[in-house]
Length: 72
Image 1 (cartoon, one colour):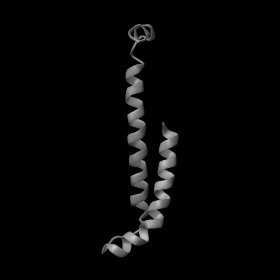
Image 2 (tube, one colour):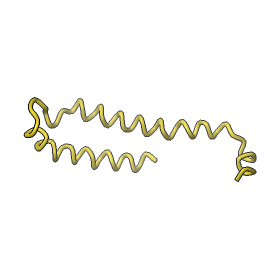
Image 3 (spheres, one colour):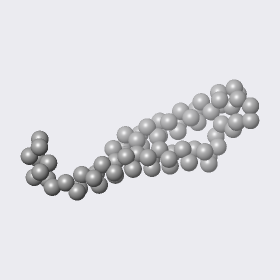
Image 4 (cartoon, one colour):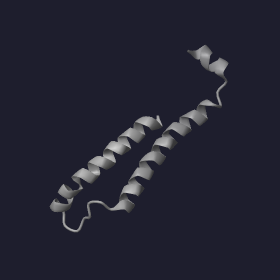
Protein backbone atom coordinates (compact mmCIF):
# COMPACT_ATOMS: atom_id res chain seq x y z
CA UNK A 1 0.00 0.00 0.00
CA UNK A 2 2.86 2.36 0.72
CA UNK A 3 4.66 1.68 -2.59
CA UNK A 4 1.98 3.31 -4.80
CA UNK A 5 1.84 6.23 -2.38
CA UNK A 6 5.61 6.64 -2.58
CA UNK A 7 5.45 6.64 -6.37
CA UNK A 8 2.61 9.15 -6.32
CA UNK A 9 4.44 11.41 -3.89
CA UNK A 10 7.57 11.30 -6.06
CA UNK A 11 5.61 12.21 -9.19
CA UNK A 12 3.69 14.88 -7.29
CA UNK A 13 6.81 16.52 -5.89
CA UNK A 14 8.45 16.67 -9.31
CA UNK A 15 5.25 18.05 -10.85
CA UNK A 16 4.95 20.63 -8.08
CA UNK A 17 8.54 21.71 -8.59
CA UNK A 18 8.04 21.89 -12.36
CA UNK A 19 4.76 23.78 -12.23
CA UNK A 20 5.82 25.99 -9.34
CA UNK A 21 7.01 28.77 -11.59
CA UNK A 22 3.62 28.90 -13.28
CA UNK A 23 1.88 29.22 -9.93
CA UNK A 24 4.37 31.82 -8.78
CA UNK A 25 3.77 33.94 -11.89
CA UNK A 26 -0.02 33.74 -11.50
CA UNK A 27 -0.34 34.48 -7.79
CA UNK A 28 1.07 37.37 -5.81
CA UNK A 29 3.18 36.66 -2.74
CA UNK A 30 3.40 32.90 -3.14
CA UNK A 31 6.79 31.21 -3.30
CA UNK A 32 6.91 28.25 -5.64
CA UNK A 33 9.45 26.02 -3.92
CA UNK A 34 8.90 26.38 -0.19
CA UNK A 35 10.65 23.35 1.35
CA UNK A 36 8.71 23.54 4.62
CA UNK A 37 5.38 23.29 2.81
CA UNK A 38 6.66 20.42 0.63
CA UNK A 39 7.89 18.44 3.63
CA UNK A 40 4.67 19.04 5.56
CA UNK A 41 2.49 18.02 2.61
CA UNK A 42 4.47 14.85 1.97
CA UNK A 43 4.47 13.90 5.66
CA UNK A 44 0.70 14.43 5.93
CA UNK A 45 0.06 12.29 2.86
CA UNK A 46 2.28 9.47 4.10
CA UNK A 47 0.84 9.66 7.63
CA UNK A 48 -2.76 9.48 6.41
CA UNK A 49 -1.88 6.54 4.15
CA UNK A 50 -0.15 4.66 6.96
CA UNK A 51 -3.08 5.29 9.28
CA UNK A 52 -5.56 4.17 6.61
CA UNK A 53 -3.70 0.89 6.31
CA UNK A 54 -2.99 0.40 10.00
CA UNK A 55 -6.49 0.82 11.41
CA UNK A 56 -8.20 -1.91 9.35
CA UNK A 57 -5.23 -4.24 9.84
CA UNK A 58 -5.35 -3.75 13.60
CA UNK A 59 -9.06 -4.36 13.60
CA UNK A 60 -8.64 -7.52 11.53
CA UNK A 61 -6.15 -9.00 13.98
CA UNK A 62 -8.87 -9.19 16.61
CA UNK A 63 -10.97 -11.60 14.53
CA UNK A 64 -10.51 -15.35 14.80
CA UNK A 65 -9.43 -16.64 11.35
CA UNK A 66 -11.74 -19.66 11.51
CA UNK A 67 -14.77 -17.46 12.20
CA UNK A 68 -13.83 -15.19 9.33
CA UNK A 69 -13.50 -18.13 6.94
CA UNK A 70 -16.87 -19.56 8.01
CA UNK A 71 -18.63 -16.36 6.93
CA UNK A 72 -16.95 -16.36 3.54
